[in-house]
Amino acid sequence: MNEADRLRAAMRVGERSGHGVLDLDAVLRQGRRLRRRRRLTGAGAAALALAVVVGVPVAVRSAGAPQRPAAPAAQPAAGATGHPSGPTAGPTATAAPTPVATDAAPPEPLGDVVRSGIRYGAEERVFYVVPVDVPHLPGVTIGLMAGRRTADGGLAPDFLVNDVVGDDRRDGFHEIGYDQSGPHPTRPLVPTFGYFVGPAERIVGTVDGRQVAARLVRWSEDPRVVIFWFDPAVLPPGVRLDGIAAHDARGRRL
Amino acid sequence: MARGDAEFVEFARAASGRLVHAAFLMTGDHHRAEDAAQTALARTYASWSRIRENDAYGYARSVLVNHLVDGWRRPIREYPTEDVPDRHGDDVADEVATRRWLLAILGTLSPRERAIVVLRYYFDLPEAQVARELGVSVGTVKSTSSRALEKLRGVEAAAPEGTRR
Image (tube, rainbow over all chains, first blue to last red; front, side, top):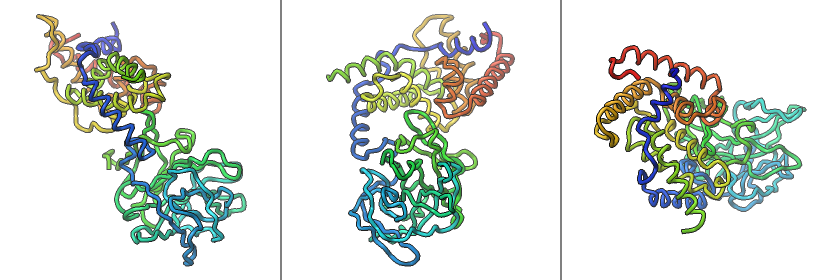
């Protein structure tokens, strides 16, 4: 018997049959609770740790001129759905995206535009922070835009996420952008993205028991803000994470 | 009980022994192991309609292992001698010695490394699948497995004669 076989054999020592090991009634109860929570939130159970998503109308404040989209509350960000040049607003996508009609100019990025390396022909996916104005929420002044750097060097905004409660600089994860709009004729789907405030060096999501690592870049204007996104090759756009965790440089969970 | 629930209960009865044992190998703690297996099965049940026709066992295993890798930060504990299987004479002594030896090896590994060893040598998964389930490279799986076997050799060399396997 070689070492690997000895290790295998040793691991099987003490194995018991499943009967009576666990309280299956408790498993069913726990599973039903989890199912109910998922239905309520429309997200995986662990995603409950993320900010609660509620519908609050948000306007992008562009170049000092406050503007409000002519859209009802709870509009998910879907800027390019027929209006690729218009800024859009709203919390993360929890309902079917709706085009937001606005004649406002695209919001100017605050700080550096982050290149993702994800290319769509001559265009590249980029992320940038933009100013937002949320009624009754003075603590929320920024949102994170997923856009495209176009072939002529311009920016095409696609999808905006921003907090809809509390403070946009509190420690931890903030709203996460899930693009669940499905295939679209005028823009590619947006990879799952968001930001974390704190000393994160690694961000890992869990989906269907599988772990997926995010790409991270610190915001030029505030290094505590860590912008992250998941490569669509490892996490298809719109697929909800079951959980997400950030770790510091020493591997400690934040 | 609905048909789906009955199917799940049958599945859970069949799978829970191995899931609990795998969790014990990763934590060295029977109570934690049962909690983790229960959590993994509850999550599996919550997604049952979606996964029942696919690899439900693989789903439960993957949830369990990732749950432990994410949540288990404390070092593995010494073998709890109060929970000895119901066997007789030399069998029990052998089993205790084997488990102590095994936990000594696993205790030197990080949670993720233990997960790799458990998936590779307890569940007998190919390296590529271990890598996929844990979101690590195949190279990491290979090197961790090799390091575990090296440690096994080291622990074995240092072990008293009676505990060598």
